[in-house]
Length: 583
Image (cartoon, rainbow, N blue to C red; front, side, top):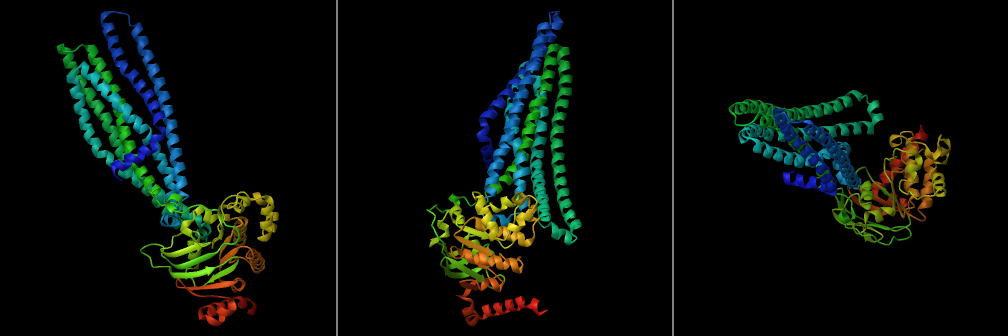
């Protein structure tokens, strides 16, 4: 990102809080002003000591300035810290809202752990640069200028000595700050790699243990952690150079001013009180210079974080404005589906998955999609749900191109059971009502019976409130599949998509569920991707796909007689189903 883009992105996060930040800056400046008055009071104190005048009033004023300045700066610091947390909260809210609305291809091109790190660690770095950095730059800059002016009014020669040292340090800072930014961005990328590696390991934890891969995965995560450490240390090194440069500048300035100032006092050019006040101003200059260095360092750190956040914000989402769909009055009854010469590829650099797919499915009834692996069957469901956009042709639901629907209205009409039947961490009830949060207890009980889950709920220690574990780890594969089916049925869809929905069920439960699906298909349009012949033969129509094309559409009996590929698939499945009994 260019510097201009970084500033615009930072200002976008800062803008809603600019009034409260201005208030915090005002308190900081008032505290700084009380600090500037302290060397002047000290000068008056030294002058009175030389003239034998009373110093009580000056001491009281000096004490009051110290106490008042500390109190005001504390209030300003609290306001800024609180605002910083508000900036982080707002950024996280916005980013979470966008990430959960990303288009599916964007998620598939990204690493989940990397996306999560944008919300966690990157937004944390954002907090400093949008508040403390801004205020430090403003208050530090104004205080620096005011201090320089007062020092110049006291003695221009000593001011020239001081500025000469500061300019040299400024040159060092110009070289160091870009290195801080580069090291910080690489450290953040390494932190994202840690999240990605851990997410991969915990996402397939049983496979990891069964494969004896603990040491390999541990080594991968440790390597990412060491990479983050290396870049973090590099950033810390350059920040240390920046801070030590400030300390060195002040110390060299002090020695130069003390030597040259002492000579000027001895020559009678300035009184000793002026030298004392100038030295106090010099020490006071540490604070504004430190604030300016801190602001510059935080900006470099924050610019690295904001670049990663902006990249996440630019990912394509499914917001209605981007999708082009419009809401319409929801239709009643079963949905119809049609593909008209549909072509699709997952990425421009990949070959086409669909090569002019066409079919029509009236409702209600059950339609089965069969074909070899890679024929494009599951992709049909992804195009209907608008997880992907067809690159050619049209996908129609109820006679309307799915691109003319809003995604919310389209998906509200569809119940979808994925191939791996995911179950989310939480309770069984939360999983069931995930797609239908307004479901009544009676509707839940009904769907539990229909999906064959009633006996499971009775066995569970807390019934529907039982925690199912990460990705449903406390449930068997068949139970997870039935939960996913129950979740889809509870949505009361007009179109039900089942992708290998019975693959993990035993024969008894598969038979029971086939009866449920057959019953549902009397009122709802049901599309099934299936490999089991027992499921396929129940379908009202069968769509045979091969290599991204539709070979044939018909009933089981007609296709066995007319389509060689379907006949071969059917014969193979007959053999597969007969083999256990033959043993």
